[in-house]
Length: 400
Image (cartoon, rainbow, N blue to C red):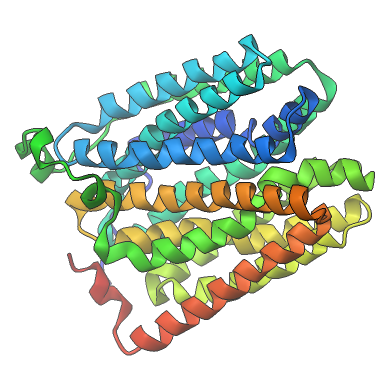
């Protein structure tokens, strides 16, 4: 029996916790900034720009940090990103001018692109290649749980306290992340240590796209485009429909994403990404319709359960799929492309659906129905790739 390489090291555990607090700090703002913008007089299009400008900033910064990661140690880059995120978060509390908030959002996106790329690359360095699906699955779970729990905390604070309390709590979580990162021992690959930083060799598009991993990143973009409608409009939907306890969607989303993650991570390592995504895309589609048709918090809870099993499992699966198709030295660029696919998906979804809502008077519930089509496209594209590659043993793709 082959001995498994150690996964649950002290450094990996600290990194997971620190990354979780990073996403908790950030994701509290995702569902609360749109209604905050509405409170201070923002239009539907401007509400969409809150997410879109952020996404543009993140996408622009990732090629640069991806190039830097080819030659620089991980720890200092991770801590720089974490400190910057915490500092920028505090800026939202100093103004209610829409233009300034949008400017801060763009700058926040630049920092987010830096931080998520370095954190994800640091995780790849710590996870044994033979356990990449399981390891990155658990790392992705720290992302997913942060994305799911934090919005409910943010919504609760937004509805019951002053906006500055929300910002202060977000900053506090950011400080915890910085402390945990400081106590983490990072592992920089030998090939990276040998390289010298060379700005002349930088290519924006060369560092933006990892050709080996383009397909799973593209499908991930479509997946998160579908999710973008929830991120931007679920709180507004709850207000329109008079549904209380919208946070239950995020809570049960997190619980069921956590429960199924050990199963889906091991299935990925044994069979590849296709089986996980084919099943989970249908769960996400069903969850979307449960939300669109919701009339009370019980329906919202059902949507959270379905979406947690579906979307909550697909997120880390896509990241592991993207990473598994590239080399370790280019994992930083692949990670950057993966996170850019998420930000572009959510950002463009917010902008396009915001325009559709304001220009054509489409109800929020119908925006969810439109977005659900994305998960059927994810199913179709994944099935196509499976049919093309099912004759190749999955573990061959891990021989890098």
